[in-house]
Image (cartoon, rainbow over all chains, first blue to last red; front, side, top):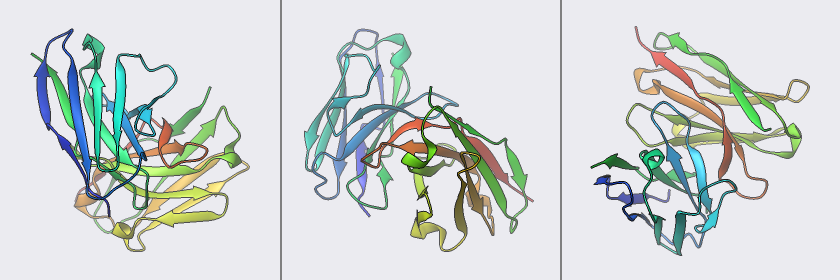
Length: 107
Length: 117
């Protein structure tokens, strides 16, 4: 199975900060990566797919980049509603796998 | 609008089975794959399996304990997990797969299963 390693596992940031989360795959997965946001007690919500395509309705401050084994999710200016846990997910091959998550907290 | 509505929380003893439902609305049910993902407390999501029509695929992690079925007349998918153990305590989600690739564009609200004696 393809392993996804996210870093950092948690971070503290202030409103307005630029935040970058990385996701590394154990083998090349082209651009078959999605990013989700999950708030406490809620289901994950799709933010980005194909590594860099923004899902409809997602604010433009979210962006994704990368291909192969190294990927990043960037929030250009952190807003209060962005404090949550973020997961990457690969859909290159089965079994589908998720990263370990990055919890974004308020500084 | 697309909605996936799941059945309510369940409590089971070790060794028992549980069946959850996921009712879809707002789109053509037969045109999309439904996936099941679970998430133990404080853990990353874990892929379980999918169904589209009469086709299914399961994660090997469930070694014959998992069965996913569908009722197209009711636009509903069912997930049965048997021989439950404490490690199966988790929130179980159904999710709709994108039309062409295996990421999840809509999710159910989740169903918490507690396995405890």
